[in-house]
Length: 375
Image 1 (cartoon, rainbow, N blue to C red):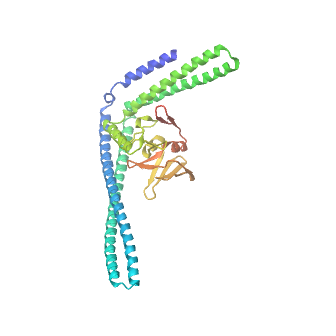
Image 2: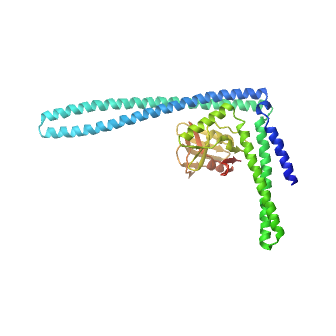
Image 3: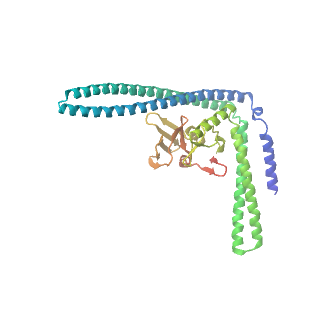
């Protein structure tokens, strides 16, 4: 009971500390960094909006092309029918009918040429739009790299200053570890006295079982409280604008039939991970943006634009995969995943469990509160 009292006192201190506005704890340099990051976010958001508009324009053009191709097929069918009637008229020496069918064939040929020219123009338009999308994506990548460089410079020049939310996150991780250790100990004690009771039938062991069962439930409840607090801490590292943008993106993806997971439901041990696109759940698999995965795992990620191959490297481990391809290569050995990497909101998302585990890291999924922990 003394341990519980001490623990509750620590929790009270944490809650009081956390209730202080994070903005009041941040210094002027931190405010400047927030403004800079907000500017980057605005530029990236504008580019992503441009990309979405271009993608919609491509979809509209493709729909028009589909209609033209249907018309083209009908004309080709009409041409074949007219050609067959023309040949029959020639065989029957029906010069008048043959001339009529020949004239019809010439008209159809002209219509076919016009449609083919229109389709070709549409194809050229799509190529131009795709080039623009590629340019915007490259600009986004450059902005993200610049943002990362500035954040790294701030960290190096800031005497390793820890941000308020980051300190809270570190404290919570430590307290959660303590609670988890207590829970595990209670579980072991429960199993120990359970075996003794089953072998001897003595009532004293039954009492010990009941006590440790209560202890296990108590510490399990404390871990739940830490997760709730952790969500708030993770949310605190996003600006209000960034958070609103993530909520809007989540609603957009859900409207398209995708299930999303709140970004503050993903806990990454000893890493500062920020998402610009919500994680999605597809066919029971969690997919997170490749950029966030790189930060979470400390892996080096390369994207080959020519062959669309993603390479993930960490130490001696090399993972290669392609967009929309179920094949994946671990150190050159082919394997298969049931949900492949894919593009969501112009971002590459990848199956987190398969890749994290193959990088010799751990990932825990809690189905009760839909949280994920990577460590």
